[in-house]
Amino acid sequence: MPITTPANPRAYNRPDRATLVDADVGRVGAAVLALTRELWVLTDRMLVLEEILGQSGIDVAAQIESFQPGPELQARLDTKGKQLVETIVAALAGTEAE
Image (tube, rainbow, N blue to C red; front, side):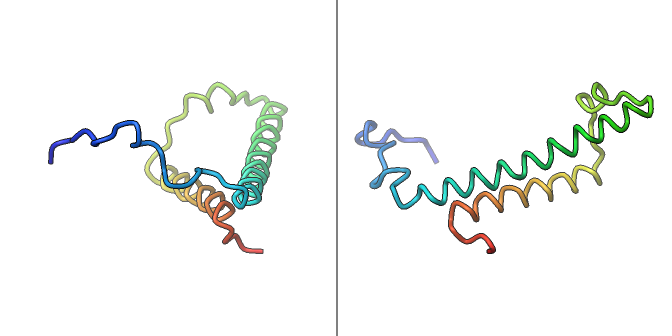
């Protein structure tokens, strides 16, 4: 199917409603807070793990930066990533578990 130019290209990126309206602000705030909580937990755990390993004589920072996961670990990473995205989307939609 060929790509066609819309009759009015200037109207193409102009939705019928504002992308964020006042009613969305609370959900966006909740999503940002949920994402911030998740980011803090991950950052905290990573720094603690690197410190513990460093105290044991194992400097892993460079290895972490260049690490390539195998299929099994990649599947676990994908699952965790999907859960994170679902948490953020649920917060935006107002459907997160209380």
